[in-house]
Amino acid sequence: MSFGQTIALGALAGFTIYLGLPLGRLQLLSARARVALAMFAVGILAFIFVDVVAHASEIVEHALVDFKDGKDSFGHLLLLATLLIVGFGLGSAGLGFIERRLRPARKPPPMAGGAEAGAFAAEDVDRLAAQDDTRRRALQTGMVIAIAIGLHNFAEGLAIGVSARAGAVSLATVLIIGFALHNATEGFGIVGPLGSVKPSWRWLLLVGLIGGGPTFIGSMLGYSVTSQPLELAFYALAGGAILYVIGEIWQGMRRYGYRELGLLMLTAGFAAGIITDLIVEYGGG
Image (cartoon, rainbow, N blue to C red; front, side, top):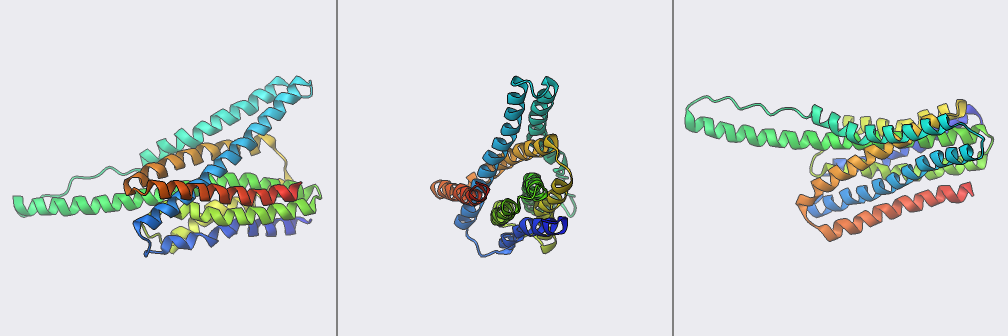
């Protein structure tokens, strides 16, 4: 498979994420439907988390086996283990710190026109400020999900590029098809937690680029360069970021209720992740 074919198919695999993003523009969803969509997204993210951690652990375990067999140095093993731990910490605690710093401080409302008028003005400003803060936080959460998915998809793109460069055309093709199906479900993962917030088309375009674009970039890089530490670093960052996002969505959805429905949809999302991943594994076998 040529370099041009690889990047074209890598782009196809990455940008199927746009298939699920337009759902974020729908405003006809009830609270029950929003919970179902958000928890379906959590199920997808939970599967991605398990998948990411498994891949990252596999890289470190292979390094451990090579060290025991005398094929590699302890320094290389220590580097990979450190990348996994530090990367995971940066992806989880680091994102939490950044999100907190980005959260704007609420300013006190101006008081004018007497005490009674000022009280009404204060209530109106507080209500509008709360609505604005809710919208901002929802869009920030969606953006963080897109970043986490993008880190994960970059590592997937590396796998596409490496297999194509090695001449495993059938494997590369199945990887592309499988990742395309998988990325299509990831669009739900981004817009599901938005709830009643209606994102702009510009915002949807941006998160699609952030979430799906790295598959395309990873395909190009994987075709040219093979780097296990780079792959591990992105898996570790993605794992930490996804775990942080799952916690944020879970906390946000609790206020709506519908606990049993949410858990059923979480299972459905996890199942969707497993099914699309099995397509990739079947082709790889």
